[in-house]
Image (cartoon, rainbow, N blue to C red; front, side, top):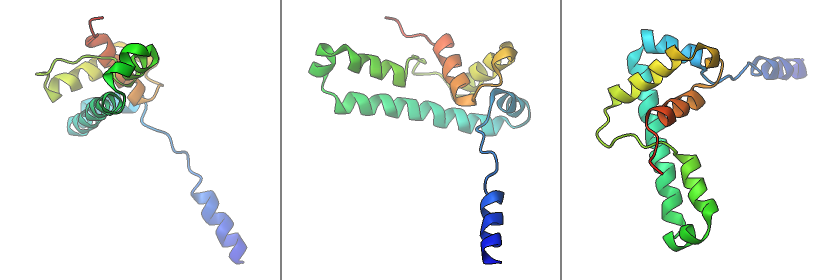
Amino acid sequence: MRRVGWILLVLSGAAKADFMDGNDFLAACVNNREYVQGYIAGFHDKALQDKASVSFYVPLSEMEKNNSFRVLTNVVKDYCAPERATLRQLTDVVCKHLKDNPQRRHIEATILAHEAFREAFPCSR
């Protein structure tokens, strides 16, 4: 009997663990803007921190010699939002991107947010 209990417990915990997709995120853009702003703040802060971490741990001299380190920092954060961009502006950019690209809303929200920032705020090369 104990074994059956374990099996039921394991099976009940095997629920689908999807991340938020673009459809869910667009619905939140309309119905729960505060949630979206929190998500975007965390997303943007994480991208800034990841880029700073790579830059901190890889000496500039190594980045100049080895192009793969420069590529890595650009993969981590390959958009250049203006310093004075507000959270509301960043949120608007992502929500507009979702609204304008319904064919891509099945994709995870993190990927779509990154895509939106990359298109809206390209870095000058």
